[in-house]
Length: 115
Image 1 (spheres, rainbow, N blue to C red):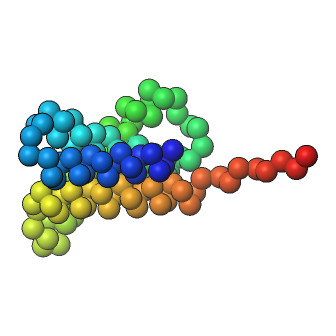
Image 2: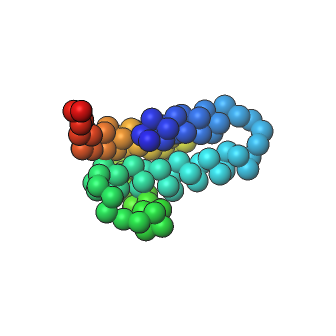
């Protein structure tokens, strides 16, 4: 599951950066990356067990993303890093990848049954 999400992030980031046409695709992939993925990944990292039903998880993902991404960008601005498209994309990608690593480390290993 995490590898699929990371692959989607990479594809969407490539589309955001290098595609000169297809504004709708760039916009939709940008919304997906900024407004959904960070929250979804961090909810998975903070609650690795199935705590929420699907619709709750999706709604909370948007809310958590809307809290995390501006907060991180605000902190970067306060420490003196200039905000641009490149720094915003790199920061969002770093936030997603860090959350994916935490999620991977916190998930419970599957129990192997011996038969």
